[in-house]
Length: 217
Image (cartoon, rainbow, N blue to C red; front, side, top):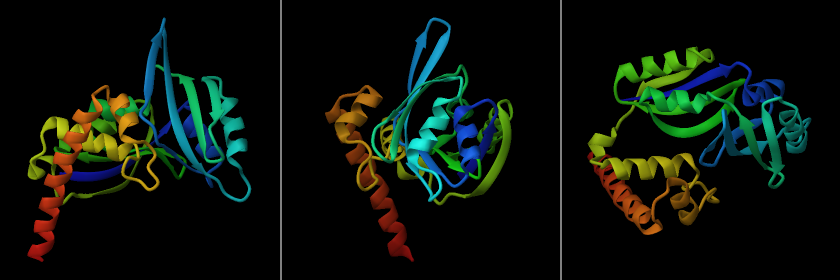
């Protein structure tokens, strides 16, 4: 099991253009990606948390994003959050999903690259991700290391793994929470009670295994 932090300079993408224009900005997608197929257009919507520097405000950043030809709408939710709706047939998110890697973190900015933290069970998954990213832009590997654990080691079922990785990537475990249980269940199209049960079991397995490892040291 490998943990990788990999970025792509995605050509003709509003996110890459914006974070390259304003490298002092720290931007991270914090919502589940919403996609709609309208005719021959694929409409994407996401919410981004913007941490701005002294010389650039979130409003100014949003105005620049709005000027991109593929962006349909930019809404300021508060002084740190913007919601962006754009038209794009292919996204970096698709590339990660197609690779078979498990997403550990939603898309975020790093040195002008759209960056993802992922877990890869097999080397072929990393090779596939690099190939997928290579089709949309330049690729940069920020870090790659062996991961102490795998989903199989924790004994997670597919549903438990999906629940806990989705909760992590959407900010459920951040403080303050970026999404509550009801909203997360809606994003995953499952019942709140089912999600709660899957998370409870996944948390119990992960924490028990980590506690065992700590006590061995």
